[in-house]
Image (cartoon, rainbow, N blue to C red; front, side, top):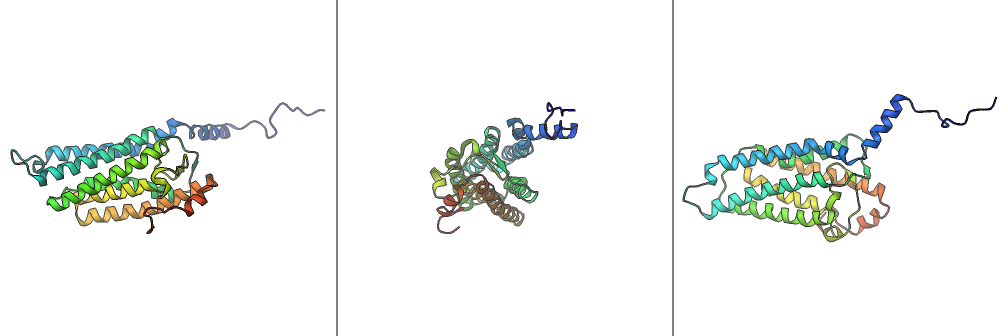
Amino acid sequence: MQADNTDPPFGKPSGYQYAILRLKAFQETKLYDFLAAMPVMLWFGVSISNMLLALANDPAQWPAGNWDLRYAVALVARITSILFIGLVLVLLVVRRTPKAKAKGLMPRLSAFFGTYLMVGVVWLEPQPAGLLISSISLALTFGGVCFSIFALAHLGRSFSLMPEARRLVTDGPYAMIRHPLYLGEAVSTVGLMLQYLSLPGIAIVALQLAFQLQRIKNEEAVLGSLFPEYESYRQHTARLVPGLY
């Protein structure tokens, strides 16, 4: 009796296998990417709301008829921090779907804590700051945001939170630094922390930066696995600070 060759060599997939295939296909869509980022977007959105409420309810920021430079600098520093968090929030919505992802739990945990702790200090009590601290905070936050925008103008929709690869960017600040966006974020985060300067605030930022460094290594592994030219690019660039790291 001649074999029936109409079925696939390994037979039809079972219901479970079909569901797995459909799930994998769904994970490649923009909708899945958006839903995966939803918890982070909610966290950032609620954090921004908390900062806005703190501004509205803090009488020190609205001295009736008694404005001076210290108040103005502190207010601009707080507003700049809000704009920085809002920028990251927008990019989560418009980014491309990834072409490759890191495997395992630890890379995801590093990205998770590196992302969530970045705005963790805004849930602390804002600390009164003199003109010097407020000015440094404004300079770091504003400078970090500007550099982040510069990096994002080249990174565009390839922005990621988890260790993922969307496109290899090597122009603009990426021609010298492999992770200029993380550098800008780190500078902004330190500036933000100065508005909540305390031992818990310092501890949160130190822990966040430690997770960011591990996150960088995880992302480089993903990029190296997808783009053969990444090794040559890595040898001619700094991770964060040219000449230092």
